[in-house]
Image 1: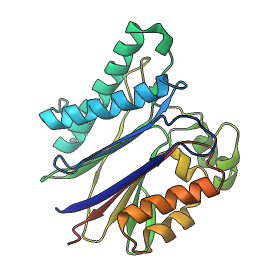
Image 2: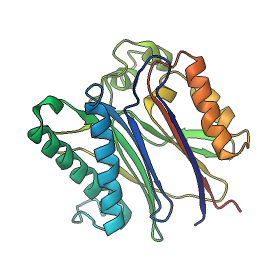
Image 3: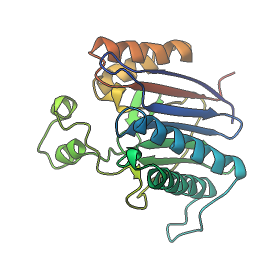
Image 4: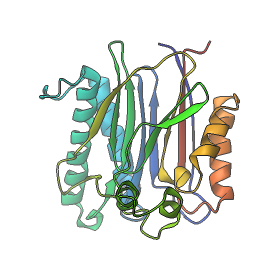
Length: 248
């Protein structure tokens, strides 16, 4: 399966540093976005550790032991990568108490010959744009997402709520990660967007669909999404990584 890709990242208009990290390894079929937490330096370390560890696991072809869900090999490799990332964060935290409390989200796509898999922890997102329709493939592990699911808050209210950055799952030193894993069937013409919440936290899905569907080059599309987020105030770091499937 041929894949074209582009990525862009920006600290936003209100942050002095960028705690997002991403990885694009088309040779491995691996694409990851992570959004670090824990303040300047700590957040950057957590997100970079997660991305580098998931990449290393994919490069070595390691996989977690099969479980009762009959996960594909691609899913098990992502599970192994996420678990090792959490352990790497714990090791760094134990070695340096100043990093205590650091954590990161992570959303990953692994495209292999046998199957394509998604792995996800936190409130970064993976979207699929197909035939003019945008679909969110991941579920946010956040306090506001839980309120929306229970009907106590609208999606627009969630984007503006002061607790919108409170996540209920992350890769951290505390507990073993509870990773959402799922297979994904891709077809020619699909566009897959992986983004940190600095994008979808301020930009509507309707606008994201319009930009993805405009047919512009991927580099320009990534930058347009970042420009839109900054135009809406840019309250957080913004990362966009877009894949386009089987396009000559």
